[in-house]
Image 1 (tube, rainbow, N blue to C red):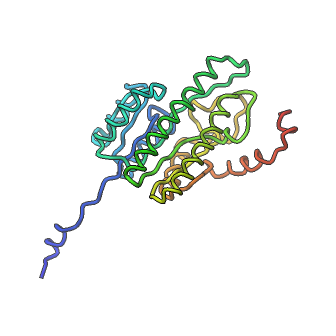
Image 2 (cartoon, one colour; image 1 turned 60 degrees about the vertical axis):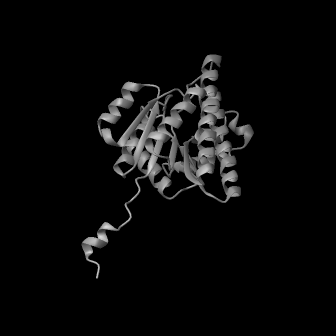
Image 3 (cartoon, rainbow, N blue to C red; image 1 turned 90 degrees about the horizontal axis):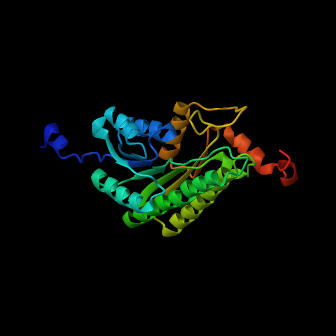
Length: 253
């Protein structure tokens, strides 16, 4: 008869989940990295500011792997993603939390170019690399932080809203590809309203959400493998209203 001690020695060890967060120096990406570590993940963190990544790592040195790169440099991004994945021993979840955007009513092209370059070119490279990696291993979960701003255009920030619309549609295309593959590949589109981060810009802002509450709801969406979710939930009401405003009326706003 096998003793309970012998049985415990034959148990299969629990596999630690591995995640990569693109854009973990501050805001949603930074707070989500902490939550994932608390939930038992080993996390690869990236961003442009090494000192902020190292500060995060110092809170729990054994749980983070740090790589510094700019998503706009796609050649370097490829190298660093491969290094992160190798050092983590694989990746189950990748979160794209990097992005930029500014109020730009004067249509300063430098601002528009920077926004498009980051939110479209760099973002697409990361999304494509991730999807192909998951396709090769036949499983994985890609999560991207888009925005409720992607539902309509904006006179105040034309490129930001347009690039978020691009992301929303691109993610839908990747979800369609994953469905056709019939593999365990999941695509989650997170559409926040206004969150209390540096990205919340402008005057007269309302329903600005705490970072902690935002990240808790994002984690819940990841666990449930949601396809699309508005953060926080009440922003679904605003989304529904935005979609239904007639074009002629919206143009006057």
